Length: 252
Ligand code: SF4
Image (tube, rainbow, N blue to C red):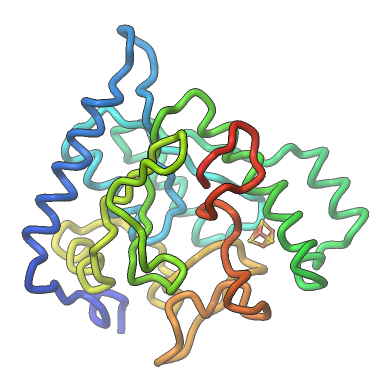
């Protein structure tokens, strides 16, 4: 049974939510349009290649918005995710920029701490995320005044308060799917034939790096398959933790 068969169930207010999401994205493209002809837009879409982000990419492309897309290729993604990335680069109307970690930093970290460092302690796991995700993220967001994410309130307790537009940090963060349900996401994917990661058909709702993601069982929490060996409280990589110690005090 596919993820579409399992999950595609629109909520009663789906049409209203979709209209609001389209309006937020359209307004954002206007608000953060390039200041001079030929310059890059001042907003970017963070695409993890998960279901929510593939919906946002589809919306940006179908609305023909001047919003670029970026992907963090950590060097630890599943083969299925890398194949989806190649399909995305080939099919997206909006440009897709891929950011990779600094190779020397990865080589030094792995030779010092080992390939499985992320399982040894939370500190080492976060150090790996810093090198492979956070530093590339700071480059992806450099010069941008706003960014778009696929965060949804339903995803975890830590995300229950996610606002549609978050102006609490210097860089504005837009979460146009904040009130979408998992059923809404899959309803949109089914209705619009959105390309998606086949790992979703193998009970991976939340997909990250291969060493740090596993399938979940029926009844398990949405993010139970991420860093499953850690306490719930530690389960964010830093991308969406407020006041993380990043350059420029990024909201990430
Ligand atoms: S999710 Fe795991 S493999 Fe990926 S950067 Fe973080 S610790 Fe490293």
